[in-house]
Image 1 (cartoon, each protein chain N blue to C red):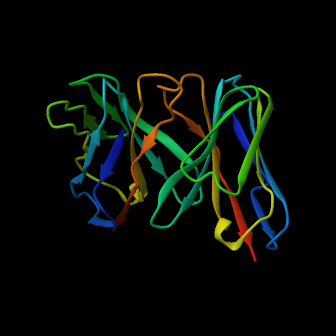
Image 2 (image 1 turned 90 degrees about the horizontal axis):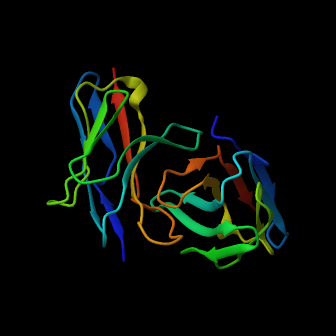
Image 3 (image 1 turned 120 degrees about the horizontal axis):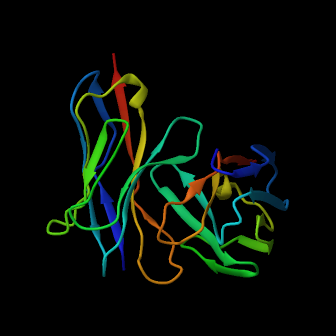
Length: 112
Length: 113
């Protein structure tokens, strides 16, 4: 158990709708991350957080926003979903940015 | 900037064959190095790590040695099993600041009986 849960695990929605994915960790870790995984691209970092209300962009942040109002929760929002955002989304956390990250089981998001 | 390069997959092996998955890196300073494994339908799990030059990480029969002179961290296993079929990711940490881990693109391994 990596002390992390993602919700929902699966979601199907339509283009143009807002979508929020939730990541919850129980380890009181400072750092949290959102990735997307697509065939041929490996893992790509969307946004990350290094503390409550402290966030920064990753390599594929366009079209995504995040919020972290509590240590344990990190939300990823697609303000207006597009078909190119169909992907598997992973959240991860760690107590030290130089140490291994612990991953959730992913959210499979399909945008039609 | 920092980067990780893994061998392209997929890799297909017969059961009990020897496995090598190559990983090389570019980094300033002295990063820590990691191998992660992702089984179908799951998230990534840490497989092993090494934090300084010449360290050997090992777990579940897998090994990797931190080679600073060749900037490499190749993953090896002497005898693979069908249950080792997964995607393997090499990653490194930037020793300064809040910078996230840098991941390679992953190598898919299929082991056939």
